[in-house]
Picture (cartoon, rainbow, N blue to C red):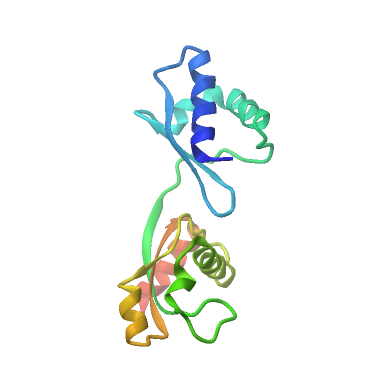
Length: 162
């Protein structure tokens, strides 16, 4: 199921209700299969009267298990001294980070080591990986987009006390 198909289906449902004023400009899925909707020129709360219908539309296209979550506050953080090697590897090569698999493992590792912290997009290395490799660096900085929930705020507050 592609993000474009989800967007198209939801917009078709709203269009059929003559609600062309409210439409979804984009939808995306993260590595866990969560669907993130971006309504155009409106807020997600304006879609509330249509949630049951939207839910039905998603079920008919084969997405029976999901929840609607209201707008989530997100923040960017940088985590330092992250091992550049992939899980289970002793050394690393540039091609280890060429696709999404390595980043998916990295995000899942961050989630396992930090319960309650929700990484909401693909992690990004801070700096140039070619230079990391040339210098034979074993660690690097990682930029994460996270949900600013209670657990994340607690961790940030603890870091500011140091």
